Length: 278
Image 1 (cartoon, helix red, strand yellow):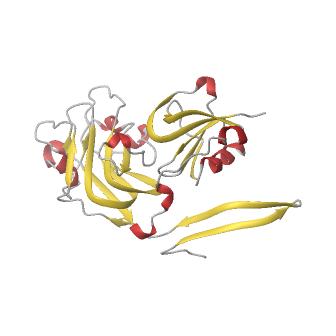
Image 2 (cartoon, one colour):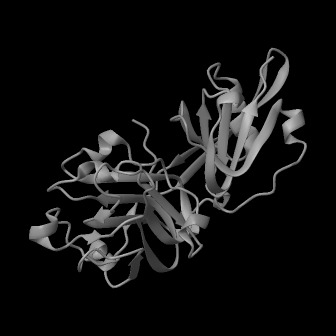
Image 3 (cartoon, helix red, strand yellow):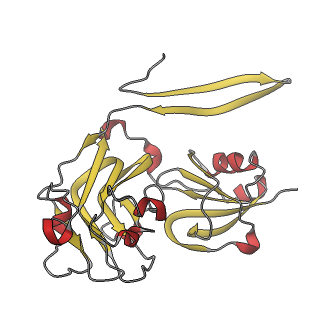
C-alpha cells in the first residue's frame, strides 16, 4: 500500500475535460509526525481560581481525573477561560483536553480550543470544532481537538460560553499539545487579503467579517487555500447555502442555513458568506 511519511505531498492536476482545460486545486497529505510539547513549567493562567485549583495544574504532567482525590486539575470559578503561553511560536497540530472523571461531565460541552499568536485569546481563531455533548459525556475524559490545517501559535487556550445547569466552571485535568516541525508548517496560517470583487464574480454575498455561523453544525469541514476554493466546495454541495472561512487557518465550513435564518457570533479572522443559487 502506498504510504506517505515525513513530507507534505501536493499534486496539481491539469486535465482537459470535454474540451475545457480544468485545474484541480492541490491535494495535500499532511503526514509529518506529531511531537508532544512539554508544557510543564510554562506560564498558564485562567480567569479565576476555585479554591486552590490553579491554572498550572492542567499542565503538571498528571492526568488524574479525580478532582478532589487527585488534586491535579485546574478549576475556574465562573465565566471560564484558560490559556498557556508556549514562550515561542509553534506549529500546533492537535490539542487534547482531559476533563474531570468524577462528576460534572456536561460542563465541557461547547468548550472551544483556540490557538494563535495573540495574548488576548479571543483574538485567536478556533482550532477545530467546539466540544460536543457526546464528547463531554465521555467518561474516559480524553477529547482530541485537531487543528486542520495546523496553526502557528504561541498561545493555546480553552474557553466555554455554553452555560451548564449547575455551574459555568471550567475544569481541565490536563491539556496536551502536539506540534509539527515549524519549518514545515503551511504558510496558509497567515492572514490573507480578500479580493473585494469576490462577492460579485462568485455569486456569493459577504455577510459578516469577524463572525462565524453559530446556529447549526457544519455539513462538512475541509481545508481550502482561499474563500474562492471554499465557495466552489459549497457550490458542488446542493445542500450548502452558506459557508464560513477562517483566514488564519484555511478552515472551510459548509452549512445548510439560508441567509434569513443565519445567526453569527464573534470570531476573529472569520468570513461568513451567503451562496446565491439560481
